[in-house]
Amino acid sequence: MTSTAHAARMRFHVDSWDPTYGSSVENAEITIGDSTAKVTPDIELAPADWKPISPSHLPDPGAVIFVDGVRRVEARIWIEQPPAAKQATGAINDARHASMALCASYAAGTVCCCPDRGAHLLTIESRRGLFTTATNAADVPTTAGTYQANITPDDQEENLPALLSAALQRRLADLEILVAANARTALAGHGVAENSDLLVVDGPLRGRTHLPRALGFIKSHRTAYLPPDLHAMIATLATSERSPVFLMGTSWDRHAWYLRLPCTPGAPWAGVVRLECAADIPTAEAIALANLSQLVLPRYASCEYKDTRAPQNLVPVAGLERELRRRLGNAVLLSRALRVAAAN
Image 1 (cartoon, rainbow, N blue to C red):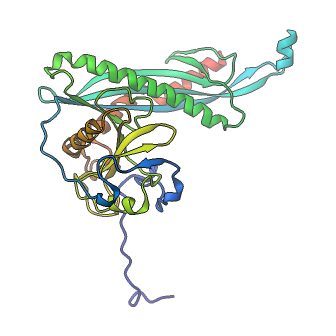
Image 2 (spheres, rainbow, N blue to C red):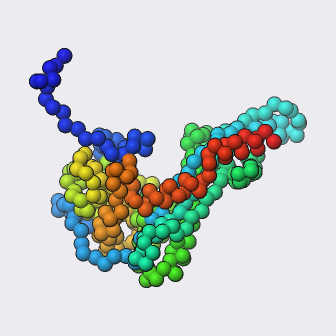
Image 3 (tube, rainbow, N blue to C red):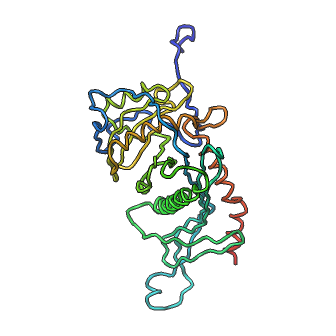
């Protein structure tokens, strides 16, 4: 055994995120080979001129609206189905085939931060759903609410739990779009100048790029999208500095940039988030949104002693998540209600 007196001391940093949520950097290696994205880095600066960009002096937006959603699977159930041959002939047989389904609750809402009212809940919606590939599925009424049937086409090449989870996520994304649109309507009575608000969606902006003045806020990093030399520059960002804007294309296109939020010094990518905005807006507008993100988002960074996902889990988003989970209802009672409904 090596003597501790002569062993070199190892320096290390502990990720501040609760391991329940994974890590702020999902792949510690972040090798460029993991990415198949098409990246156009010369949107704001030529690759040879890439450097950290300091914050600009800008007027504040009239309001900042944070959008988030939560989901929870209350039960996995099995829906009985007659064999196809028996269905075709109309014969009656007690034998049944069963198809797995998910019973889930999901909710989405918005928090508005504006000068007149501070941070306050603006819009909120919740739903319960039954997600399945069973074509004979129907709504499931319970004493705690009705789980609305959502039938998704079967795909033999995809894992069924993943298929149903994706269907649930699509419904949640649709609900987030609804609450975001309703939030901007609700701003009418807040004394906010028209078209002066900024919308921050917690998560990728995919499917929501049509929303004006909207940013996607990505907390964790699974892939290195940039070439190695530009990727290495991200680790040199100081607090509130950002990377130049670049264009990124995977299954969809968007403008993107990296920003470091205020945090305790540590791992190279500590406090780094990726921001996204629509690909079809003018370059100048995308750069203006990037500059605005530097002004606005560091103000809402969370603290380690208050949030185990600090600083990336923004304070208004953390509060919204708590309220949304409360609106989902008691999981034990919902599970019991489903068991009673099944017995009946």
